[in-house]
Image 1 (cartoon, rainbow, N blue to C red):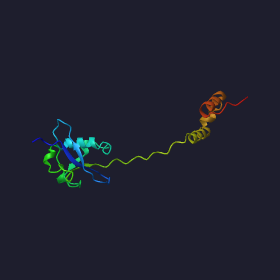
Image 2: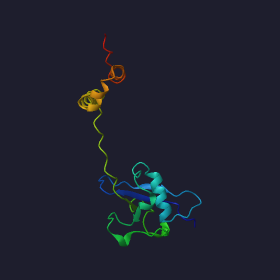
Image 3: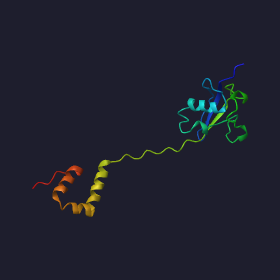
Image 4: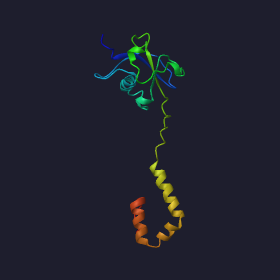
Amino acid sequence: MASRNWAWVVLKREGVEGDEVATQVFCPGGRSFNVDALKDAAKAKFGQGLAHVDASQLSVSLSADRDGAASVARQSTLVETLGRGSTEEQPLFIHAPAAPPQVQDAEPIDWDDLCLASIAWLRSTLFFTHFQKWSFLHDAFLLIFIGYPCRSE
């Protein structure tokens, strides 16, 4: 009898509540279908949902409860010997750690306000006051960085 190279699994992501839908996962050909291969296959199958983890961070168990450490399968265990996963009604469970918190998008920079604030700061410093002594440099600065036309004489 040929060994099985597929299993029915349910993905359980920490912190994500949702429908538990059994999905059939296939092992790449030529590889022993042990728990380690099942984790690699699950990572490939659920790519976007598991983008934040490596296959080595996944765990495979016989129960939906991740805390049942006794039910966590060892890496070298052949999938067909686990007693589950051969039917959609009795899947194996792939447990994944929670995704890192999402970084909120920062407010867009209002460049006009930033430029005006920078000009105000420059004017308040001794640098700008000292810089005004050289009139041609002062005019060039205003023209290039601020956009003011040079003063007419």
